[in-house]
Image 1 (cartoon, helix red, strand yellow):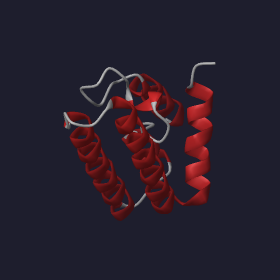
Image 2: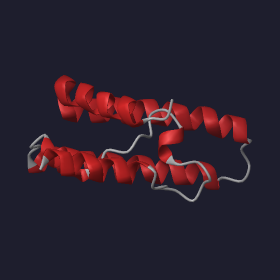
Image 3: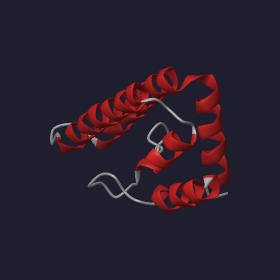
Length: 113
């Protein structure tokens, strides 16, 4: 069963989550955290709800950032990285050190060389 969840995660890694050309995993801090991993780790309903809220809030901020016509792209990229760092810190707070480390291991194994 766990192997099935890992395959689902691997399939979802390449799915873009925004209207921009880059996928979330192209920018540090925006790596995907699929439901399948949360199920494998047996997160409780509150943890899952909190992660979904974090995901939605940061996705909204990211979209607003890139839809602002007055800022230059370099400024947007810097802001996007800062948002990504904040997002990861919040997710780590919900997952805890052990599950966060497991997620990072999965990301390293699945990222291109």
